[in-house]
Image (tube, rainbow, N blue to C red; front, side):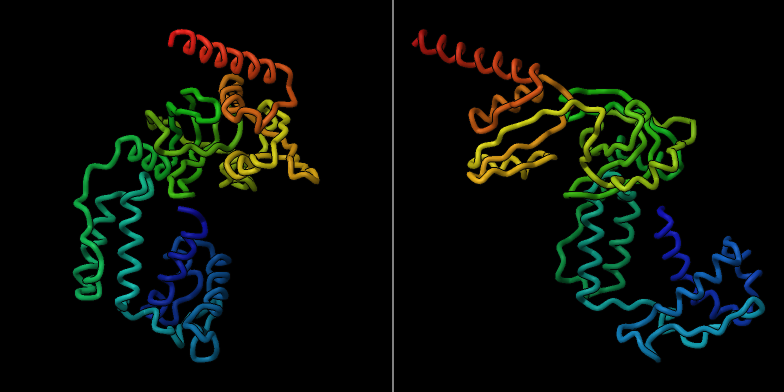
Length: 320
């Protein structure tokens, strides 16, 4: 769980905790909550800004606290049992069902149990939703990756890299699981690449949880590109491309840098690639719409591939 999620859970539990323990000292509360006194006092100051819509007097949580005594004077209703409206119950159920369809994000059995409890508690509020599909066995690969992330263990992955058009095996130090563009990804420090990488769950062919703890460097946790599906990796070769105006749509599908747009709408841009064969095949497929300006080995590879394709067409025509 991320630090933000951990703090949110702690803040949500603090109000009923202090309401049940009025006058407790900061040192005693910090010890029971498993945080330092400094962290506890920071959390209490954060609670001043939490409450009900309106966010004025009578809406926000109110506390009286010091090192010697902490007391909740207004809970803003957070200590009352949650009651869902029809809209809230429906939204929550839809969100939970989407988790079942996203591998690795949660234990499907636990999610199905939560769905059943909410449907039972909400009654007619859940009547407008579709019945939940029966819980099935979790994909073994997804279960292994989720376990390694939760327990802080390294992973041995067999992974299909679409950019390199190759299957590789590597040891990674997991950081977290993220959802982007309707896909689940493992964000991890790849020891082979010596950098942060995103591994799409449906491209992980095999995963083995190792006994050794995951040790991603601090840079991996603070990486500004932590959830980027692509960022300019200087370790990869770079192609310079000339893109015709009627092929500008290519920019929407492939990551480009150093983009220059001419008056006639044509574009010059650079693109990183992991495999010469994969890049040559991609460029040949665009025909005259995209030309390779460099490097020379890529231009030659595209020329050879295009010539072989033309020869195959000519041979097929001769046999008609």
